[in-house]
Image (cartoon, rainbow, N blue to C red; front, side):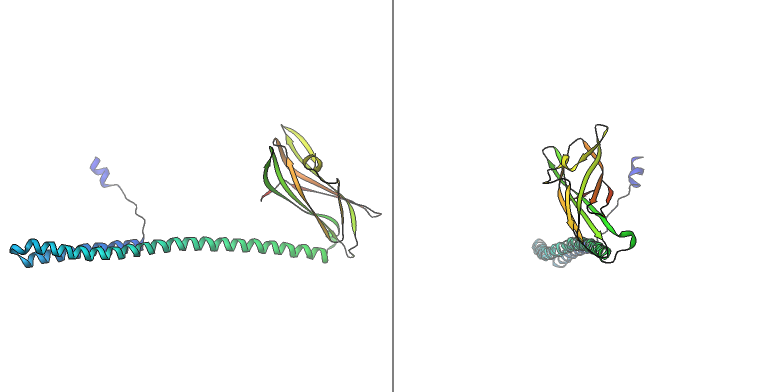
Length: 243
């Protein structure tokens, strides 16, 4: 039974054309060297057999050693070429990805400025355009988040607009829902945040969330002042980017 099991055992061998060629050449040299030594044995005969055998084997060994060194160098070149090919392919793939990301960013910027300069009816007025949340680590047991808020004004005549903006983070802690204001999570110089701009204005800062707080969404409320003042509100899901 053991012999039957052994006879059915399969061996999977990785195909490596370059290495197989090198090994084939080395094997051919060994056979050629042995044949040459045997021919010398048969030719000499008598008392010269031992001397001829020794000299023939020395010659064959020297030739084989020289060729072996050359084949080892060839094998090293083949292996190095494979490594370089893998590295070059990965580098090219990474470059293509980076170019794709840059193209997406440029297209987004073009759309942004197009909305500012040629607005549609649905886009007019004060807008909470964008909110980015970037995870940046921990500080004193609190999770640190960088935020970037962008307000825009989409109108035909770009006059200055002013007002205030509030930011609230909604989530839960120990099973209970909580609403944390920007002043609970950071130390802004003034709050609500003041804005005054013609085209757009951005705000940047740091939030420090309690370790047991699970954020779910952010509510941004902007209120413009003046006779035509209005309030707008936009809710963003808590989607963190990696810094």
